[in-house]
Length: 479
Image (tube, rainbow, N blue to C red; front, side, top):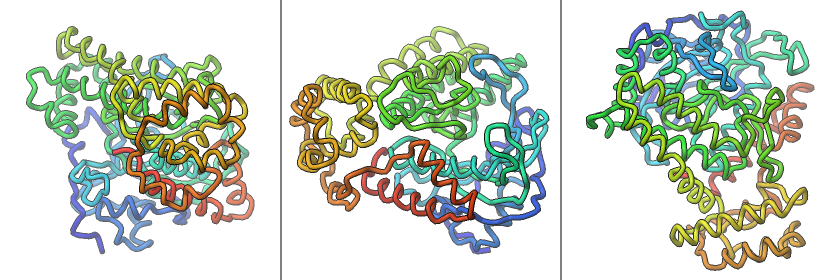
């Protein structure tokens, strides 16, 4: 098997024992048609040398990788779903397949532990009468979401593999029967807030303490040396979650189902369901058709993330004093504001001029976005003004020139003029010769799916992913 010498297995989660996961078997699918393999992600973990046949053996049949987990593990967790506690959750159509160390990432985060986990891989003890399957359309949507978020600088899991599996599925929210698939994602962690919630619900402070130790030693080594590990861990999770939420907001992304089982301690976005990108600046915009109250609307995401952090803190209160946990939670607002300022400057391609001037610019940007109303889409604003005044000629020669003469935009431009572009050589990319940016609004997602459903034509999707990748390289966002 041509697994490279860069491959470094490190299956640490299974050491936590049977209170945290159940051994399961993958479904035996009637067909295995490889539809997507992420060779860039595979190179980061030493798996890019696999042939397609070997790839299918591991990511459709789920034969164990060498020296890794001996078999899949369905992880146990609980969670609040739309703020109602559900003790019957857990990996119902997925499992943790393998863990390995990142070895070649251009992010510079070599050595991070990464998970390979699935969606649509069959029934588990936590399937709750579900079939354990994933629709092919759902897999395509997750590929798109992860690719676009990565391009926009959001910490995210990456779609690693998508295999069509040859079954007809019946679903209430899309035309049925519909095609089936199994997705594998590469993510920094699958330790959910709900992983802690399950142990708290069961009144197992010993297991909470073990989970704290595991998370600290695995993901936040500095925490392991702190006298109050639970407090120090929460401080790290609060900071990571604040940064994640700020990046969602700067990207105009609406997760849709911000339940506590959909947030992980490392502050990475994952498991994309009814997500949306904002068409225009609208704090009340919702992604999930069943979110009738707007609980998880765009503008309420910071509030929701903080509420979820409070639930995590409630679990940790079984193993440490409340005072330190409250102090950690109280840091969220400042951390979020600082992270949002940094995220907005990153999206505009600008160097910081200090907190006061940065905040004034960010406020002016949001005012300008709001003033554009129905005429200004979210993503084109950032595309037009990426690099600041260095892009003024391009922006003012583009399709939104009439908008940019309005009072709110003139104030934004006045403040923008004081900022220097960050890495201005990025503007030399051919991406910025276009009049429109890459967007991912729902109409386009449906348009990309249509040729797959109707004629098994994957070329529009492949072309879109290539354009998103070009945008990722051009923007070079995040850290």
